[in-house]
Length: 97
Image (cartoon, rainbow, N blue to C red; front, side, top):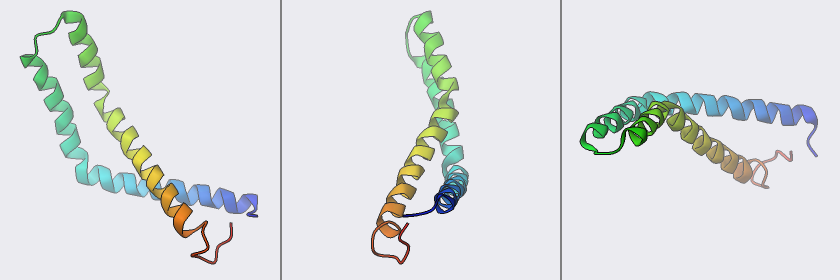
C-alpha cells in the first residue's frame, strides 16, 4: 500500500507531465486549431439561419479555444492514466504503489 506522500507525488508528477504534453501539443497543433475556429466563424457567412441561431453559433464559436484545450487535456489525462496503469501499477516495474 502506497503512503499518502507517494500518492501526492504521483499526482504532482502526473499533473506536470500533462502540462508539459499540453504545452507541446498546443505548440504543434495550436495554430491549426485556432485557424479552424476562425474558419467556423467564416462559414457562418454562407449559412442561411435565423438571427437567434446565428447568435448561438457565434457564442459557441467564441468558446472554441476552451473546447480545444479541454478535449486535449482529457486525451492527455487518459493517456497518462493508461501509461501509469500499464507500466507502474502492474508487475512490469519494481514500484508497488
